[in-house]
Amino acid sequence: MKILQALFFPPEQPGGVSSMVPPIAERFRNLGFEVELFSLPKRIRNKGQDEIVFETFDWKQFAGNAMVDKYIQTYKDYLWWVKLRLSSQNFDLIHSHHPIAALAMKQVFEDTPILMTVHSSYEKELILNGKIAEGGPEHLFLTAIYRELEHQMDQLLTVSNTFAQYMGTFLEQPERIEVIPNGYDERRFKPIAHENETTQLVSVCRLVPAKGLDILLKACAELRRRNCNFVLHLIGDGPSREELEQLSQQLGIYDDTIFYGYMLHPEEMIPFFDVFVLPSRAESFGSVFAEAALCMLALVGTDVGGISEQIQDGVNGRLVPADHPIALADALETVISDPHYRYELARAGWNKAVSTYSLNRVIGQLKRIYSSYGNVPVEE
Image 1 (spheres, rainbow, N blue to C red):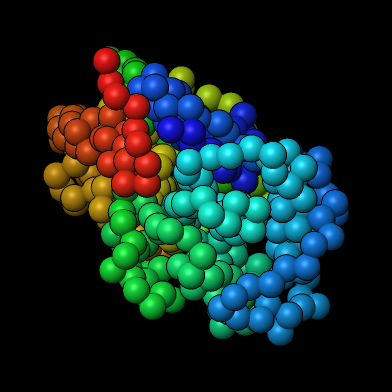
Image 2 (image 1 turned 180 degrees about the vertical axis):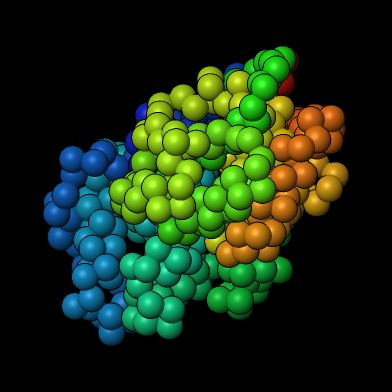
């Protein structure tokens, strides 16, 4: 069975979907499948000229909007690249991991079954990061894409029940969505026994408003007022970095906070910390929580999206409301002040991550779906 995994970003792009799909492809190759990866190189800009037509709505009502126009041009570029590189090939199945990739593939491979995994909500991220207005033309355009995907794709998948419910509000048949949570090769994550005299907090994310790091800094300032000892490590970069550094200075915790910037393989460093904390304002799944759990860190997150499906408060981590620095400070204080409690949370989190978010589980679920569209290789 020949399968194409269609990404948006190149597979060498660290983090997110682009880092999760290659291990899946490798596992399927080991099972006898023929698997190729495909993505749009970053250097390709303004090459596509084809007319874009959606079957469920007229995108031209939003034309002239900079974000919409850029989205459509990227769609044209992806379509141009697909025609240039793949039009002479045949596949038994295409599994796409980005809406643009999925829709472009369907134009070229009309008779090939195409699955689409929706990994995140681009419109939510843009709203939370102050890039677009809720209910504005960009928001309406991006949410209309869900209905187009439902119309064009043979199967829609997503990564959490919460996100399936959100996406379903834009679909005619939301019951057709199948949920397959992300999976990870636990061999990549190696917990390390260590004793830190001062509790080491860590967060790994892009530095944007949607991740709620302003709330984390305010919570840490509250911890400092309570005489809780900690060091906060922020791994990642983004447009909010300068603002966050200034906020940490204003709050008097700059000396307690380390800004690392971008790091290629943070999982090599994470096991040396004690607590993973990320007060996101929205997450479709929250992959970094599963990864931190596999590194045996105690988890502290917000009760939003896929985070609330990963963490059961007080059992394998702590959950707090979004945008609530005092509640976050309270939760952090409980894990800072009681190392035994922190260890029990970390152990429970590791157990759940290994059993629920294993790569083997994902392979099994995908193999079942793939087999419904063609003959799968016989295992020896």
